[in-house]
Image 1: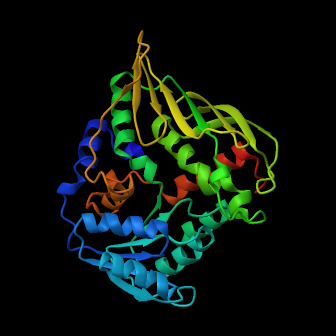
Image 2: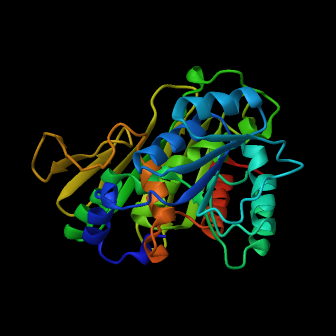
Image 3: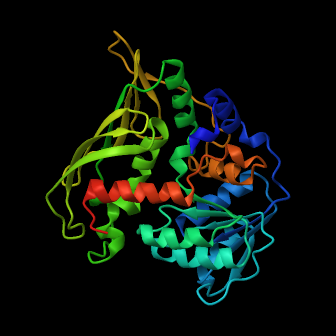
Length: 338
């Protein structure tokens, strides 16, 4: 992940000036017509990319997005057939969670070399293991967009200048009162810690390192999430940084990350902002950061930049292997059996 970039100053300078890069002659296909497909299209248009194609299985949805953004739309039942994608500079897979792996398999078989897959890639490690065996020369990344938030990159910069992270606390409280049309039997909801909570868990690892040890506690139960409703625990990362976490899905709250360094406390709550408090100070300061496209969903244009940049050593988006580790963490934290 971020080990590819040794200098946080360099990474922040890069990520905060992505509007200066010329990608207008790139060819990009988005598979899917939902919310994230729209957000990706908006970001691609900001880069002034001319050759954008939306591919979907529903004619109405394909027409809606293609008309809205003035891009090419192609209707196809891609479970059976995919149009030729082998010459695309980037293919983005933004379909439902259960369809991600089958579509990724077909895209790889077509010879695509640069593929961005919506998070979490899969709900199961064995599916990621199987797809990983098909990857040879392809660049396949999982779209954990919060990892490339400009405020997160700036935070990593500030942390390093203060000598590194001392410890970390993070919240994984979900907000089921805002969720609609829950299918209580679906593994998408029964494994919601993977489907959704990995947003914050993946971001924590980007800041403090991959988890080496986790001591988890689960209590309670929801009819749509039988393994628990309250989650507490502690652990150590590969960088010897201690952390603790808390999540109460029967209460209120939300995601948040608190980072302790020698002279500061940093807070991401919500994750899209950056707060700092100095030693001996009682006040939190809002830290300003630069973003190239402030009206675009944060992290999406940065993901596209990472995938299209000619130097892929600068791409910090997670690989299949790293994303597999995220699922293993979630299995421990949320008590999933497989």
